[in-house]
Length: 120
Image (cartoon, rainbow, N blue to C red):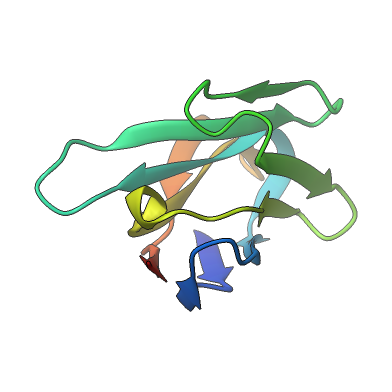
C-alpha cells in the first residue's frame, strides 16, 4: 500500500507564508509526479502545482509568483511554499502522487488534505 501524509496547514493572516509537506510512503518503486490541489468551500477542486521527478514544474496561473513547488526525491516528499497568502487562498489542500508501485503498477494517490485558512 501507499500512503500520502500531508502537514503544514493552519491559520495565518493575509501576507503570511506557509509551507505544506506531503510525504509518500509504502510500496513505492518510483514517483512520476507529485502535486497539490485545493478546494475552497463551495467550489470545485482546483489545480495548484505539480512537479516531476526530474524537477519540471507546472504552476497554476492563479498562484504563480506566490507559490513554489519542490520535491525531495530521497524522501519522496513534495513541498508547497506559499507566500503572500490571501483570504482567497483559504481551502483544503490535497496532495496527489502519480507513482509506480513495487509491483510495477502506475497509479495515482491522494492525501487526506490539510486545511489552510487565511484571515484578512
